[in-house]
Every structure is written in structure tokens, then in C-alpha cells.
Length: 188
Image (cartoon, rainbow, N blue to C red; front, side, top):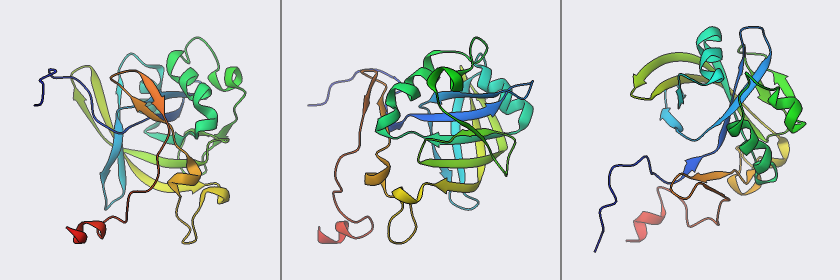
């Protein structure tokens, strides 16, 4: 029997993404965000929700652009650091010894050491309670060659992205493949 646990922001999996912007002075800044996902296929779009109080919120509004850097398990400590400090108080790239790379397509930096990066121009904002939903059109995805499969697509088992559990506030890795999408269901 299922037990009611109330209305909470719990869904699985939840990403641990690092959202990159420049601040009002052109300084690279980034924060870790878990409320996000693909929200449209054509044009390819991604959404991420941030609180107005964050320094990154102001950077996105100022520049009308952002990046999503997807950390691998090897960078879980640095990804967490991006989420527990403010760009108002410190240079997070310097503190984590990571490299801010200027996007060639949008006015936003990304994390050079992370294996996958999405470069996005801001399309829409929607205020929803405590958070503002940012919808960005994905202009390009950059991926390290080492994480690409034989078809040139990012391979989740090679990326080893960080997954966040908002209920327990723990980070996890990805498990094994369970079967081919749009195929395994035919076996029912």
C-alpha cells in the first residue's frame, strides 16, 4: 500500500547541473541547480528554475543567456561547492580550481573540465512561487570526445553524470542500461 508523504518537490532523477552566467561586471559565475530538464524537442530547449535571490538569476536576466555544464562523478565536490556558496562572496571558479570558458555562441561561461556543456539563449521566463523558470533554446552542445559513442552522441555511462536526490540531499551516480527505449516495451 502506498503512503501519502505530502506535496514536496521530489521527482527522480533530478540533475546536478552547473548553470553558468556572467555577472554585471563580466565576471564568470555559476551555480548548481537541480530543478531542470529538457522541455521541448523543436526547437531544442531546456529549462532550469532558480530563486530570484541567487546571483546567477541576475546574470541570466542581464545577459539573456546561460550555459548548463554537466559534471561527471569525478567533480561532485566541486559541483556541490558551486551550489553552497554565492558568486557575490567568492570567485567559485578560483575556489574550485576549475576553468571558466567563454562560450562562442552566448554571453555565458561554462566549466571547461566538465564533459558536456549546453549553450543556451534565453527564450522565456515564468515566475512560479519561490522560483523563476528559465527556458533556454539550446544553440549547441559541446562534449569531450572521450564521452561520445560510435554515433557521435554523448554516452551516459562515459559521462557518469551526478544525480541529486532532493529527499535525502545526497548525490548519486548512474546505473547500468536496462534496455533500448522505444523497443524493450514491445516485449510485453
